[in-house]
Image (tube, rainbow, N blue to C red; front, side, top):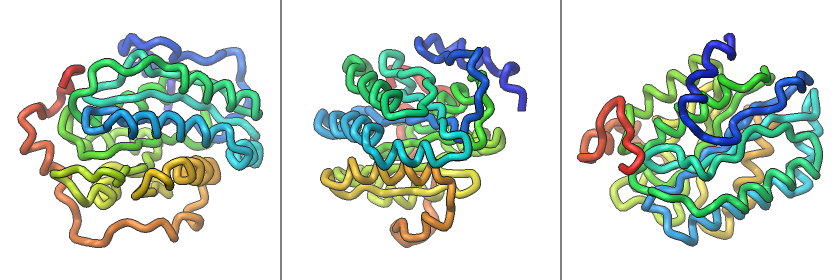
Length: 267
């Protein structure tokens, strides 16, 4: 994979803060993108819980220990929020995290992002595509590449989610999922099963459902640590609702806003 060949993908997004210090060529254990759903189905309390939960997890000593335990003791981290498309004002661009100070500074940037603008639609496929473009356009080559997607509903805008997933996985990117079941989608109750069948992909990919607000911060911290560890054997106890395989296209086909291959910013 030659990252320079895809730099234009990210630059065309027009989002600030997407570059790293290209002179810094030290080893990186994980390139990790945090992609956070802020679509209209998320109420203000869920929105606030997500931001504070990620910021709290990044500050936690267990997260710092997990970073330092890697072969290089460094990760590359980026954060953005999405709905029908990536939210430009939400992006916290790539930063090398190798200390508590770096993680705390990154957490502060998340908390200081302005409130998001348009929140229409739920385009998981756009989130995956944008997260992949960030990974492929940076100047580093981490041992692993991961997109961490959290959300509370199925894909209903943009191209089919399985196409975005498969394209990212083909580039060597792992996609993990944090389905939020705190206020389940009225049209899609089996969201954890949906994430397992339709969203996640790559070696060791996993789903970590959140069923209650009180679990959120702990779940995010656990998820980040698992992503840094890269140990599939640690994931066996993560529960996902049993049932028949999910039809990944159901919501995409029934929602009038869905147009394959296109995800309008306003939904």
